Image (cartoon, rainbow, N blue to C red; front, side, top):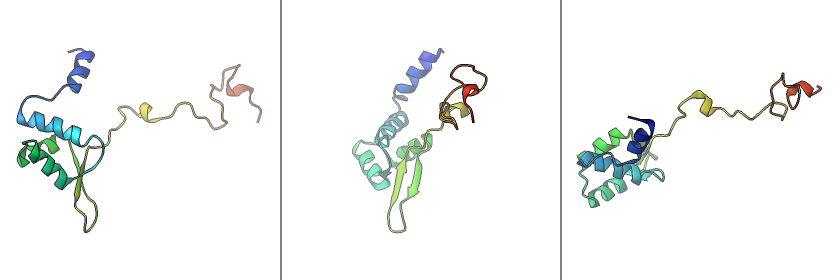
Length: 115
């Protein structure tokens, strides 16, 4: 499988099984942020998705289930996406002295800055 095929497969529906369709539906439903759990169950029922299938789909997606408060209900949300590599989480164009450049560069680098 090439990288292009893997990326295309990631964007296509999971499958035509009930679980695959529930996973796709749940991903789309939670895409805009947390949704009240009761509302998720009601919407799923309207789409013909069984509660058990919905629960399995939530495990498949690692859905975060959080209590909103002592008197409030539960909400469901997709897990936060993490950077693949530490380098992706770092900002590379910020410097202490306000200029980006290598210390050993003669032009434009920090070697020209007098302290």
